Amino acid sequence: MEAVNMKKKDPKIVVAVDESDESMYALSWCLANLISQTSTSNLVLLYVKPSPPVYSSLDAARYMFSTDVIVALEKYGSDMVNTVMRRAEAICRKSTTKINVERIVGSGDAKDEICNIVGKIKADTLVMGCHDYGFFKRAILGSVSDHCAKHVKCPVVIVKHPKQI
Image (cartoon, rainbow, N blue to C red; front, side, top):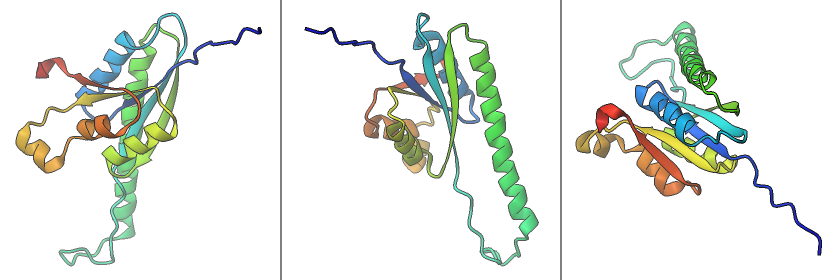
């Protein structure tokens, strides 16, 4: 009987990052606690920017939106993506483990987009920070981490920032 090579593939870990200290702490925690010291891991930095707003020539307050304003808003969104990714990549560079880092930028509702991308790339684990909004704010805004924990097909690690403990 021929032996079958059962080598486990390198894990693909997705870390959802945004502008918050909580997401950067979750990334640091992931690097310290989930990434193997003995094999190469595939780390995906996932940022979801809000869908670009759609403007008519007149907004609700009846003010004219110029093309310059729309271009400035789009540039701000791109700058935010680059700022967040540079910050996250700097944290990854400090790690002593072997990791392949990939960037993915989605656009839309964060909770739905994170779930879609995690499923599409067949992630092994999703790591997210917790904003700890409290009952009322969470009731109004919803919790992205709660939604993802219920809807993705892989394990989800929700990391609380030490200031929340």
